[in-house]
Amino acid sequence: MSDLHPPKVEYFDPAARVNVDNKGIRREVEEFREEPFGLYLARPAPGRAQFHYLESWLLPGLGLRITDFWFSPGHERDQDFYLDVVRVRREGEKWVATDLYLDLVLKDKVSVRVIDTDELLAAVAEGLLPQAEAEYALEVAYTTVEGLAAHGYDLAAWLSTKDVTATWRRHP
Image 1 (cartoon, rainbow, N blue to C red):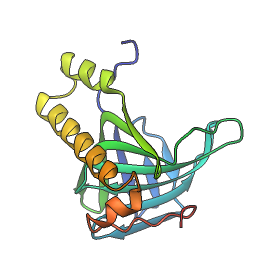
Image 2: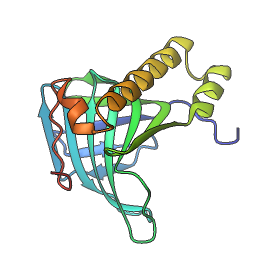
Image 3: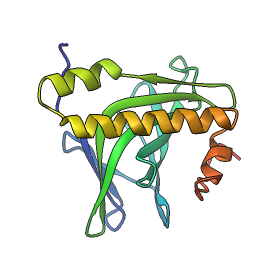
């Protein structure tokens, strides 16, 4: 696998109103909102052809980062939400998310599919991710798929059973 990489680590700093990606690129955030169950952010995506805006929820208790990408014309995808399997921790006031390779693509109220299993397995094989973290990632993915399926792939309905009320700018 040519694009094999260590787990991506991203920082979210509500006080400074910035999001710093794994390459050290700082992006201004329009809105951060902390809730007992997680952290919301909304920001433009300058320099990205595929999408021009994004909203995300970091949900440490579920091991997920749920994102609504606002795709640019000609780059639309058949999805409503993108779910990254992550480990979230706090460093003081900052939130830190480590991406654990597995992702889920959700077409709300229709279907969900798990992607990037090959990346997860390659990362473990190359020693970039401990087996225990891979097992955690798989458990999160299975639990998420089962929960969504049990609720007709309705993200809000499933999250409500976890005491999570994720509000979005584009989704009522």
